[in-house]
Length: 233
Image (cartoon, rainbow, N blue to C red; front, side):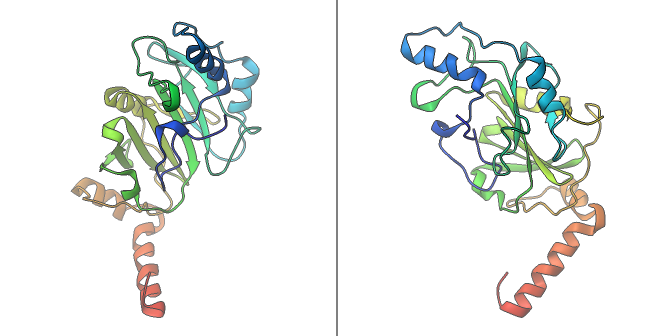
């Protein structure tokens, strides 16, 4: 069940292909078989958490060992890592009182945080969305505000929730899982120029124009060169 809940941000997939941690697979099967919606997955083991905390390829983000009432249920690590999917942490389960569109739609968790290496793509593929600045970096609200993409360092941090308020709360609590760092402080600025479709408020434009190494100015110059040489970007 190593499929993404959503891909990094270049395409959208139906809810039926959302990723589930192995710890929750049994829960879903149980509910489908006869209805045991109050069954909870086993807590994440020390070994599983340690593997996530020693993930070696890039900085991975989480919202701490608990997110409100929801404990950390599962975390990816080096063994299950996919460059396309990224590395994720998962909170809570499909207990009563939360979204639980079961059956072909799978199980929507209260919170999932996925960190993936940025892949240039227009965020128009996210459907209806709104660009903004969060934690000092460019960001995009989508999925009715229940999901938020933040562009930081060389990565994209995707926050998926079933509540726009919880998604925004999670953004404020994000900190590195496998490196030193604190919540509520500015995230590292992206070293690339995020490709953002749609309106950009003045604050976002300011941030984009002051990225490290003048990333957006260099991207614009490269685009002009491609058009001049090849007649298209």
